Length: 232
Image (cartoon, rainbow, N blue to C red):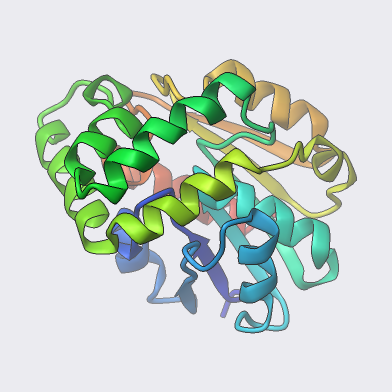
């Protein structure tokens, strides 16, 4: 059996954002979903997770989960056998982006989670396709399930996030850098830049997908993860 696989969801997402991968990979791999909800700093979230995760594991993070994955790699490189960074960024938020979150935090505290998520994941962040409306409905449902308190924690963590480019340069394990072709939050160009920084990185661009390839193009995403799990 392959080493355990730990999946870190995107902001305001739960295990359902990875449900196609869980269904396919769990037949041969011990799959764990680790929530990125317990802290107002990425460092705090990562520190809390390390006590709960296997001694050594493969690690894949989507969106905000990718930021937490990089912090885990920084803190415990010997425990991570391989890393996949999906539609994420190693960069700290710009002051403008951090400031824009303040209004969203106010809306979240007022119970307006639908408005918040319409701005966090706009319809055009997903690629056109027959499943787009259903995926947006799922995104909204995951956010409503997690609720405003978790949104505020995660928004604060993203505002306070640090630049992790140095972690990429020091990465010594097989790495997959993957993104959707039409991702407008973290572009293909940014992922190409990330892959160039990592010594043993493989860049995969998922055709016909936007910001959530795990749901938009599940078969292609799962195939890329299988190939990554087989890397030596």
